[in-house]
Image 1 (cartoon, rainbow, N blue to C red):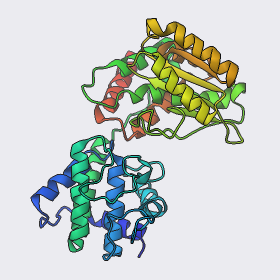
Image 2 (cartoon, rainbow, N blue to C red; image 1 turned 90 degrees about the horizontal axis):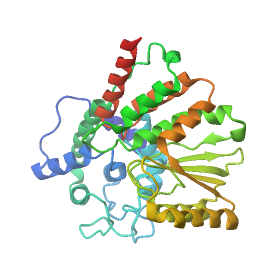
Image 3 (spheres, rainbow, N blue to C red; image 1 turned 45 degrees about the vertical axis):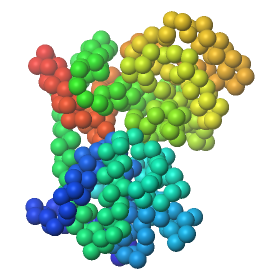
Image 4 (cartoon, rainbow, N blue to C red; image 1 turned 120 degrees about the vertical axis):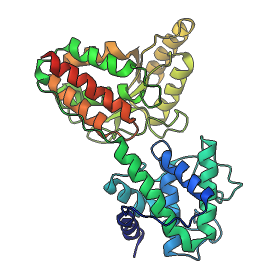
Length: 369
């Protein structure tokens, strides 16, 4: 039995209403911490699953030695990439793009013991992760029960996060002003929780699905996968929130969305670093806020310098004015509305309230007509 088959078997068993309660209470708390954070700490969840399943299949392996470069170690990342992450995606569970080990905080070349110094941002998640790994290593006979409990809670979280957003009755009746008002309301509502900053990213991704198909500048181009919006600029392995490639897989445009940050010279300097690293032809920075007044001249000089020395055009603008402009470029506004609906409905990082609000706004539009 390989890792994929074992994960599928455990997933099926986790649907049972009764789970073993023989696990220590402290471990149950740690499992719940990992499960409750499974969307914003996908790497941690994925690595725990990979290590636990590997311990079941190879009980003599010290799973804390997660890299083959370590003495008596093994490649957790390879197993994850081949078996675990594709299976998590298939099951509709939280997962990284390729592997949990692509997270910088988890890929450090040190054993996952209690002294591990990888900087997992949430200290409570880090402590729960390391204690759980320690338990897996020292209690191989109880690992199946541990995974069953973890998967059951995560499945419940995934189920709670699913919201059916019914398409609008008559999306063709909407004009640009209607759509902009809908987006402004959806972006700016006080959700009192994190995650809403991804909504403008989803809106731009939705509109570029139409633009790439319709606008001659983007002929034969395609959109990169819409990834996580929780990685920082310094740890992100992408040029921007949205990436557009030509038919030769060359990056031609990157778009960075700053939901509530004012655009200052530091943001532009980070963009310049990414331009030199990824070499796009155009780099866009869009924000709800204006450019910081005292940085206007510095930013203008950087933009001129980059275009002269590198050739990349940097564009800085507001989120709403840009969306309004792009909406004028596309043939069918209804396509954008439907793309936005689907992306919001399917996104794992958005909370239930973000989806519920779109349901409410759609109902208001339906009642209007």
